Amino acid sequence: MHLLLAPGTPLRNRLNRYLDIHQEFYKQARSYYNDSACYIDGTKSIRRAELFIRYKQNKTKIIYLIRDGRGFCWSYLKNHNLSTDQLNIAAIAWQKYISIVDEFQRRFPHVEVLVVRYEDLCEKLENTLSEVCEFLGIEYDSTIIGQPTNHHLFGNRMRTSFDGIVREDLSWMKSFTDNDVRALTELIKDDLTRFGYI
Image (cartoon, rainbow, N blue to C red; front, top):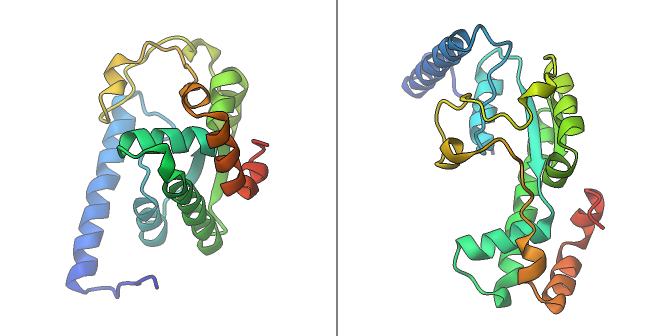
């Protein structure tokens, strides 16, 4: 169930204030960077995206970055201190992310969504960035590749250590046993096939 807030209610007024503050921030951020054509919000929160689409007349596009489920699951196990005996937990988490985006697209069919595979971004960086720029309606500039640029306003610590080189993390291939890979592939086979991983 998704709540639509009636105009004039205290909660709706607070929500509008929240959105107005962010709209002003986006405007100032774009101005700071030479009147940039767009602002890219790197949030992983679908709820945040829904707020701006539902309550503000924004031209919003979604870039859906997805990773091979087996790589995702290895990172998930590592970050949650889980063992490979708990592969099913990681598999469910990956599939949950996919279902959340699927549900978002069902509710907001008018919002454009570009699916970008993490592996394509790493292996075919120039082509993938060109596709992203075309999707966003901005001009692609190949000189940005390999050049770390101070374009992050805030985020995690990686933003300050990025050297401009995109490196694919393939640690899952070495860390999982063959049996782990087979079991995990079977668990998430349908979605691996859907996104072209098998």
